[in-house]
Length: 197
Image (tube, rainbow, N blue to C red; front, side, top):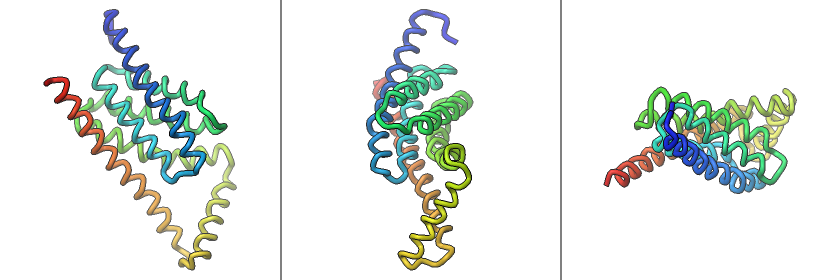
């Protein structure tokens, strides 16, 4: 815990700046991605957010810094355009809690950063099912299944092709997690070299 005034100011500034950066991305880019129903939009935003959280943690490596950064992003998300805010805000909160736990345990080394970003991108999978169930009830899954069956019939795909579609969806999240993890590790390595000359 920070006990000196300068440290508290540093914590407040960095968590606010990085949280605002993530929140603004959620406000504008996130709202646009939801409006156009862009595939893997949750994982795309989660990966970006995780990089923000890991980067901020390198500047204020203390417990709670990641959590404060996420809270700023959540506050800004509620100011964004559009009506769908609860589910994305809940996703930001869950991602923040996961990142705080991992970074507090492992730090901002390669393993900690990689696991944080990958977990953030994969979090969207259970989040999707839970939030849809809470918002629309169990009937929503029947609607999704009907859409998948309609696609199967339209394209002349076999009856069990839904398994392939689900597998492709899971693989897409994992692939984005891998790309973002590599980007996060390289970003932090670059910042470390730059700060140390």
